[in-house]
Image (cartoon, rainbow, N blue to C red):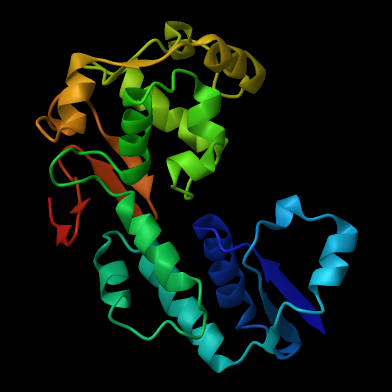
Length: 243
């Protein structure tokens, strides 16, 4: 028997549906799978805690329903537009209980119709307006940020996009990040730590929904299989808006 333990976070659930989609075409492991419904971060649990948790975390066999739900979700997320993911919201995703809230979290990271920024970028601006001036608070205080899609490396890229573009929304991030190799994580981390951040007037206007970040700054990133650029900017909130 093979047990799958996955965190409830969007990234972990994406890994789960990718794995189930892959294993569905392999008969032997597919027949041996059980899935645990974990509601806490596994990284915070020690080995003995995992052993104790096994007695009260429900496990169920992975059946054709779970495989089919994973397959259609993974294919939708890989699509060249977010439209298939919107369609998924009208589907029965109950075979994998974490999927619907995580899908909504992922969609919230698409650019907003009014600001051109996703949920995490907007939370950065909100936290800075409340006096959070260092990257540790922005990156690690998840209970304050209340977004859970991105890891630290991706959070850094989002912050740099806000601070180092032609018209910055954030001031105070070390300008040397423009030239430090992205693989040199130690040097980049040191710059993050000594930076003291604040909102620019433009950032305040975005936070007030009076300006659109994408009108003045380049957008070039991926959301699943969707390439977001200024000319191809899919927006979400509350519905999906085509470019």
